[in-house]
Length: 430
Ligand code: EPZ
Image 1 (cartoon, protein in one colour):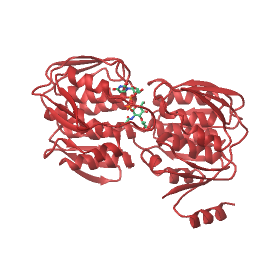
Image 2 (cartoon, rainbow, N blue to C red):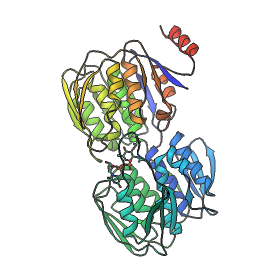
Image 3 (cartoon, rainbow, N blue to C red):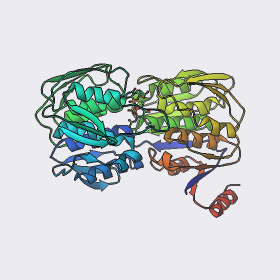
């Protein structure tokens, strides 16, 4: 099994190019099946999650052509099946975007029910409520969500919780429905807006994405398009916090600074200096980190996907901080691993009370999920000594070349798979 071996202590310095947003790509790739014409999508991150979704699409007859590492052509003229197998859903929950896409185009979809995941329960009641409001029959049988109808009719959907996934799924299902659909209490994340822009470039009529109320006027069909995915807000935020934690000086390039506002605000609050230009943000951490409180919220609030990274930073700050996780109930599992590295954090229900310590020390730890895994890598980069991190396949779900990008900033990190390689790494980095 592959691991990361990391020797901490080097401040990260330099520039790093941020890739396309994974969570936008997942929605946009799924939506690309909604036309029979060819769609060209640029800036697709080459990460496990997008690759698994592309395989799921190929399994039902979609023709996927890789033009280069980040440019993908999709043609869904010959879809022969409307059933997405359990295997894909098990590997990547976002395969369920194919429900909205296939239902919207073919009025039918059968997709394995996504199970619980290691950050919380993650129900899909709001997705189902939205499909039903549009007139679809939805039933759950033999572990599948089976949804079908003769026609979809525009409707009013009020989301009981702000949900990225439900907003995206309902938006796709409504795009070719008869009449107008209004989604209230919609998610406002940049990737929701990116999907709406993508669908509009295919001929859809969606207004209000990025606000609480999205209005979708049904159109008879969608056509081909060429589209470039937005930069990844969370990848950028992760490198910004890596700069803070290692007392570095890192410029994240190819970003949309507006999408990073809640992250930048917290970095400023804990004492980092920030410089912003049109498409880059520089983070300089020359002073000891200060403490703060933070609560995760839907966009434009502080993202739950940055919660482990800020917790790692606050664990090294002077003072006591409180981090409240309000989106997923089980997203502090990594704290046990961080404690093994010397952190002083007490978790009570959805709140972490963090007493800053002077340093972390290297340990053998495991990545419990994608963002927590990335946060533990950052902790290891700041730690004294060597850390090994198992289960890095979680990290590779959402970060392209994470180790290589960190190396380019001066980090001592390597992917290893044997004890011998670990010993060699240790000899090299002393
Ligand atoms: C998306 O997940 C992201 N995934 C997650 O990123 C991200 O953490 C999350 O949004 C929040 O920003 C993708 O975009 C593929 P939600 P999603 O529906 O859509 C509750 C990462 O690391 N809820 O916005 O599944 C739910 O339990 C991943 O990249 C319902 O109650 O999240 C949660 O408490 C992990 N009923 C809250 O809403 C529903 O029907 C927000 O979940 C749907 C959701």
